[in-house]
Amino acid sequence: MDAHSVEVRTFVGVLRSELVFPGLRTLKERRGCLVSLLDRLRGIGMSAAQVGPADFVRRAWVSACCASGSDATVRRMLERAAAILDSPVWELASLETDMFEAGDPVIGGDE
Image 1 (spheres, rainbow, N blue to C red):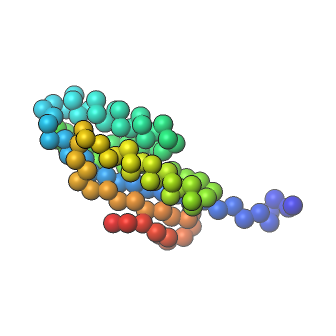
Image 2 (image 1 turned 180 degrees about the vertical axis):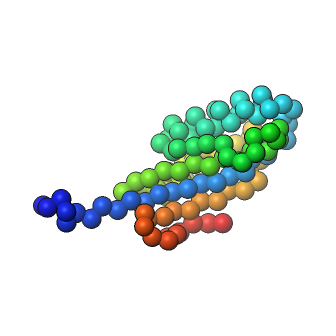
């Protein structure tokens, strides 16, 4: 097989969330929750980061993404990440996921 004739597809999944921490009193408490969450997301193969303002004690925004040659794999990873975000430690104020094929417009997602 000629390497120039191989079609390589890349699918990218993006998750955006807003978390509310009703019982926290300090940024240090919130940071501890976020470090644990980000570690868990990274543990399933996601790249994850806190995004948005970092100085709200009771609110945080977290985004995560993944890439694969299989759209089914990306969907499973996004589902696993969403399950991790379902926690009694915080309230999930919003959760959005999108999936793209590199070079194409959005091919699916929920808002």
